[in-house]
Each structure stands twice: as structure tokens, then as C-alpha cells.
Image (cartoon, rainbow, N blue to C red; front, side, top):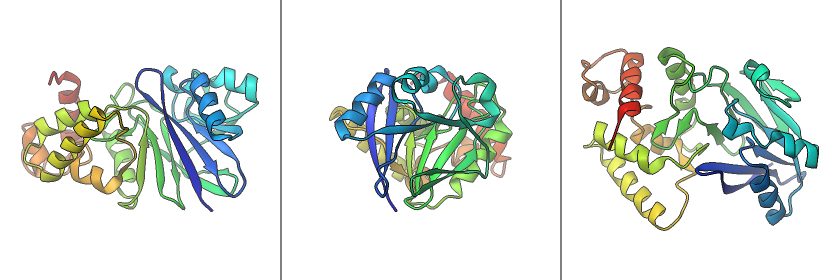
Length: 258
């Protein structure tokens, strides 16, 4: 079994994704930021969209649901914890559940913080992680609803996935995230290489996604909240609780002007 993934821009800075199960021809959209962009992507590929997998309730991830249901009759799967905030959900999922797309399987993991019920979809065979706004390249989502402890615990789950897992996040924020990461961890050689690469990619109009989890574990300051260098960067002692380091990093990013 295998999947093909189509990446396309949506709205101002969202990534749109179509996931196509090659064995059966079944196709799903990951989130629904823009129905028009999703339908055009499916048409370019010659794929028939039948499913939408939703990660969280924010408008820029669900706005296309009504049109996709009306025009294509899609089945919409989404987080049980946010069912009251997302109109049009047909299937509710929670941590530990498995979602099938043809012969492909996606493991559901809960990553609260950006929103309380945020989930991610991990395609287990090919190791593709659709992380939406829980985890970006070189960053994480703003903590709108959750608390640092549960958000860090969710990220630890993601860190435990294989290093060759490919991350497909919800937005193209990598260049801005790189600036903050460098401010926090300027001597990180891998980060400096990645930041230079990101600058070139964006100058060429290329996407910075997907990126490997191994790269993120080496460069993303939020995933490195358990490292002494990041504790020092936010004014804490080596050996500080990673939750405290994570909380200070997130606050620093919220206030960052670089």
C-alpha cells in the first residue's frame, strides 16, 4: 500500500494537501481551508475527492467543509473533542483511533494546545505526519486554548515517531520561525544550515514542506525544550523542567519582533 500527496497553496499562507491511496484511488483532503483550491487540485490530478480529515476547529482549516459536502458529497472526519465547534462532521475520532483511506491507515494522536481538541493524522506505512498547527517546521502553533504541560506532552508523542517521518504542517511559516529559532539557538550548526536552505527555497518560490522529523528534532527549538542550551536561552538553569522551558519559549515567540 502507498499514498501520493499533492501539496498546494490555500488562502494567504495555508498549505492544502490531497492524499491519494494508490491501491484503491480513494482521495482525502487534509483540512478544508479553501474549497475552490481543493477542488482545483483534485481536478489537476484527476482524483475524485471522497473524504476530508479535519485537525481542529479554526476557520482557516474548516471553512471549505460546507461547499465540499454540497458539491462532492464528501465524508468528513474530525476530532471528537471539538464536535460542537465544527459543523458537518460525519465521523468522530480520538487518540488511538485508526482512520482508513482505501488500504492506507492513519493513526490519530491528540496534540492539545493550539486548540484543546487538536488532533494529527499519522500515515503509518509511509510515515507521513499531517500535523496542521500543532507542529510547524522550526516552530509550533500559538497556544490559543491549551496549557504548556499538555502541549509539551503532545509534542513528546510526535518526537517519539521515527526520524524519517515526513511532516506536513498547516502553514508556510518556516522563514519567520527560522528567525526566532536562530535568536534562541544561534550556535546550532544544523539550524544554521536549515535556515539558509529555507531562505533559498523561499526565494525560489519553493515549499519548505515536507521536512523530516529528524531534522526538526535537531533544529526546532520547541522540540528541544529538554536541552540545556534552550533552558539557558530563556533564562532558566540547566536541568529545568522542559514544560517551563517550553512555556517561556512560546511566550518569547509570541513577543518576538525579529
